[in-house]
Image (cartoon, rainbow, N blue to C red; front, side, top):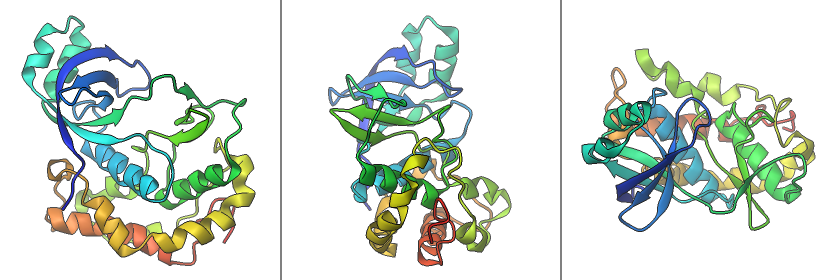
Length: 256
């Protein structure tokens, strides 16, 4: 099992006051600078799981995403933080957190950006597969860096795992759940989705999904009634594989 690399936080730099999770810029002992998504932010560990699964799946499919690491954070980092809100967050986040490589000079996607149409269609396809509800003009979660489109922030994907409080259940509903791209920031690239599907769907094998899911640190995988950690990992594989192996009526734009 090859999980994402682990580094140790050495300095909390500054908060990014965007959204409710209060991510922050953190430096680590590998000399890297990361946008840190904190385990104590309130959305729960499953948000971090979705970030890794969808981010690493995107990378495997040739979609540009920043490198991901697990950031080990200890209590010493919080002692020198003057902001009480941030200090409380750091204390609540002792342990493994998610680090997303900071891309210096990247700027947020807006109406003036003209990404490669094939790349944009692939992002649309990925969002349909993983049921991403957070890629609208209100919150594009896309960056332009060195002239290329980069996809970020995938914690709102894989909604199905938030209903596992009573057990994993069947993947059938998720397999056929339609995906609406009406509000999607890349909706103008819907005509390219069938071609993206032809290229990407055959790549999403059970083997690839298992490799991607295995990158999630075990301590982020929350208990599910009747299922241990390995069974939960297998459930992610089953849900995603059943969706891509079905009739794909979920394709953005109804492009099945």
